[in-house]
Amino acid sequence: MTRHKLYACLVGALLLSSSLPAIAADLPSETAAERDARMEWWRDARFGMFIHWGLYAIPAGEWQGKPIGGIGEWIMDRANIPVDEYEPLAGQFNPTEFDAAQWVRIAKDAGMKYMVITSKHHDGFCLFDTAATEWDVVDASPYGKDLLIQLSRECRKQGLKFCTYYSIMDWHHPAQYRGSDQRYNPTKMHADRKTEYMAFMKQQLKELLDTCDPEVLWFDGEWPSWYTEEDGREIYAFLRKHKPELIINNRVGKGRRGMEGLNKGDQEYVGDFGTPEQQIPATGLSGVDWESCMTMNHTWGFKKNDHDWKSTETLVRNLIDIASKGGNYLLNVGPTAEGLIPGPSVERLAGMGEWMKANGESIYGTTASPFAKTPWGRCTQKTLPGGNTRLYLHVFQWPADEKLTVPLKNKPTAAKLLACGTELGFAATDGNITVSLPAEAPCKIATVVALDIQGEPEVN
Ligand code: FHN
Figure 1 (cartoon, rainbow, N blue to C red):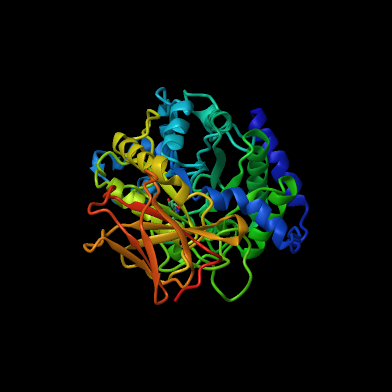
Figure 2: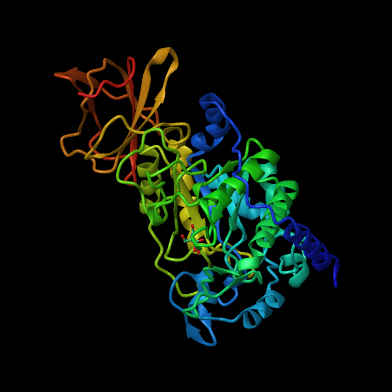
């Protein structure tokens, strides 16, 4: 028995012997000011890269010569692949083209401030060296090196926050098994092995904190019925005890209402931010931290035949829309088995970076629009010294009369095109502020007008 397996069994045996009932986890106490300080970098960042990478990039949406529907990282389930037929993929995983510095540079040049990568997706395969199992890139693949340590070091070097995704549901761990419908979505846990699996998760999570020190733990796969809100509170308390400044999403518990990603309203749920998936909430949600995670095509994990990429315009406008509602945009890339971010993703991220280079001030560190609706586009805002306000008016539809009107009673003090600094004329009449625009929109994707007003916005 190897070192890993012996260690894992010892841990399991130790925990099985402690047949104490799960005690209610005492969550760390925190004042509103302390929470604001912990969340500050994340709220200011507004824009991050999601990375779904693992063995599923090898079949890349095909199995035994047949295309498999659905999202690429679910191929084990969608093609109903038994564990022993999936395991040989590990022996083929050798991403020789992987270049951590290049991935981080692509994210940074796009204007992204953090990166969340799958440390372990539902198939249980770990992209980091873990003593809890040999089902990891170091022990089971010819590549043989810890991928997350490389990325975390490179993120620190280039000034991005490094974060990890972790799936609670684990299709490879023997404590879980397929549901009665024979699909590989194992919503079942062997009755006498939950304590062992909870210990397995804690061991891996502690390894992640100790080796690549993530700033965010992005949980997923929390929906199986064997996992409870109380389990989530236990994991949350465990993590915050080891890293008090860690930020953890709401999928550590059972709060999210499906893909809408925000918490059900029936009780308090554990987790620091909501996680809408493939959607943007209709309005801002005051006092709620949330992040929309979205793909560029239709899949999180790489699929060789998914070429339906969103346009750069759509991606930039999604970012603006999300920021105008006070949320973060976690935009996904699915690297190939060789370790390359797909070309169409790289192109779009470069295009987003061009826009962000000129207009990032209107996204980073901003808060939600004071307006319920702005037919010409979106708005974000920042407090200026002395309690005044700068509004960032993101114009999608350029007004034919070259007038941009906002329903504000405030006294305007300045207006300019943000990207080039060109000053614009403005006037305040009957509780509205009108800014005079040039005939043509300087930026078709979104032209940003910076409008300074006295005091806080007083919407008419
Ligand atoms: O099942 C996963 C899916 O594979 C992907 O990881 C998304 C991204 O957040 N989350 C789950 C579906 O909600």
